[in-house]
Length: 73
Image (cartoon, rainbow, N blue to C red; front, side, top):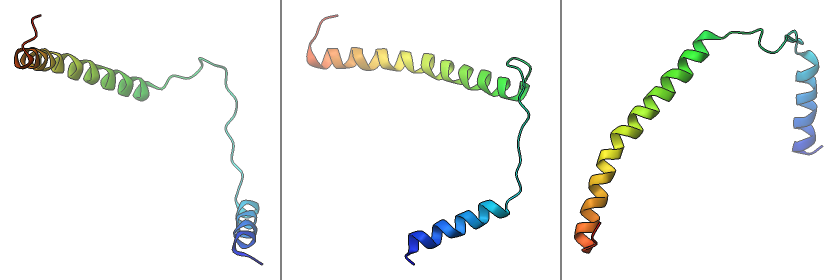
């Protein structure tokens, strides 16, 4: 018996011995997960703040590059 067949037999044994679990079906929109909503809002706000904070630096970099190359705006 090769190593692959051995692993396959072990996995089948583990799956047979494991207890089954399931989640009841629910209607779409019946759930509210407030902590997840808070995380999404937090990440979105942080991203927008980082994006706008970087914008002024990028403008300065582009201006410096154009000055270095002698390009007029």
